[in-house]
Image (cartoon, rainbow, N blue to C red):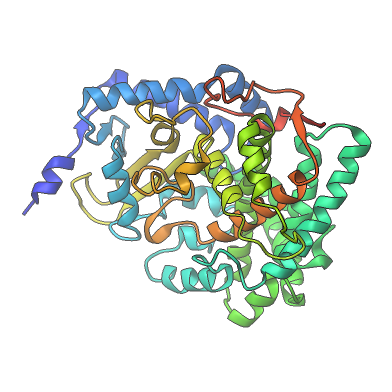
Length: 438
């Protein structure tokens, strides 16, 4: 028997015109930007034309027209639904892995290019053990990882190198920041012996660029095996003070696939960190508060840095690094038959014009309970499939920001105006955003 709740969430059917507009204004720009590996040229165009703004306006109109009910899109040969209410976002994410599985046909096609046994695309049989392993190593729910001390020292050392380069050049751009970020990521995940192994992450980048095309691009199995062998060599070293050491003690046959996903996710974390730095450079009151949070802190030691973490969370709210969250039904539900793909377009919910803080930098909402009251604010997803690396990412990002900001100031040298006096851009191209020390 169908429940009353299912009646309330039974989808309406989009018109052909509505489906086409969703495809052209929501799906196409998201795919063009690169879902697995961002494409700088496409991101530059998206930033110039502010694609996310028009997508948010479209979905708001659809929500009003269809009373916030899920919208069944007219996709030939597929059952595809679009979530339009925060209540449905909560329901979908709480329902993982059944009946709303994170492993969708699109994700399997894309992620299998470089992590065919990753937990995110694992089936119901293999998923629990792989998720337990991932959580055992990444330790979600702990603001400070048990390896936070060596991680904090690594951040301080790499930040010092970056600051020296910026002082010498007089400018901080994405490429310079990104080189430092990847050195840090390789140290944290694999140990200092992997710090300068750019070949490893270059191989992963090439595989991720292929993954953007999902099933439309043939798999480069030789490159994937070369990447896996190189990654396994670092993991086998199990260097003390790195996640590799924790991996060795946890034991998991598919560890290289899980680690490949962590490296992929750390790329998005770098984007969020750089965007947060730009926000703080342009919001003096927030910067003063962040610096006050650093008074007396020894940045070579672990610190929780609550306000800086909130700043990172709000940067991800403003510009989600996962703009499209997908779920696939494992059985018939009110959303449709088994195999239905459900789309959650996070920029719509994070920038909903009805939110008083939609287009402004508002870190306090992550500290005063407002974010917790809104189930559609999901910077790291939510529910049982929430990102297991969320606390480690926030620690690394906030610690890097602390090192870059305590004794140094910056101002924008290029990019759209970021100011507390005007709405923030809906799309922010980090690749062409430059800062200069002041």
